[in-house]
Image (cartoon, rainbow, N blue to C red):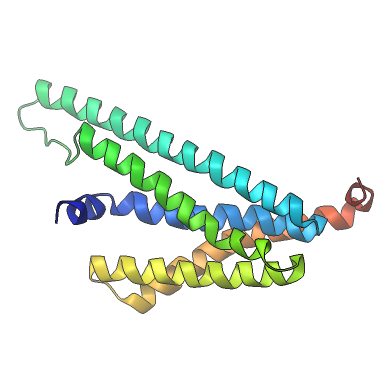
Length: 184
């Protein structure tokens, strides 16, 4: 039960990390895949993005949450009516862990196909798996927040896929505008 409470208290970070992991990784690797058609480059870029971004997101969660806690602690000392935030340093560490883990899990979804299939097929599977992941996290979030699962799924997928589409467009535009870079 204690783990379930930690998960629910870190809901924001789990949804954010999972969604951002999928979208950021998918946007980068689809852009690179469509621009280079090089499987090794796509896999390398995906692993780098997931590694760096999961650590960056976790560090950002830790530092921003800790800053908020310190501010609220100071505020509560100076004002007896100030409301304390729900987190403690333990909550900050839990948020940090869940953010990093959710980013890794989310980022792995669009990358996995490239290990098993050629680039063009990998792009299609990457988008499909990412869509399924986004729909799933949207439904999960909706169930926990007692809102419409359909609305939650569609909202998560549409907003996220629009952002990821930018990576694909940039990859296509750069490969078209600078074909000489393709052969480097």
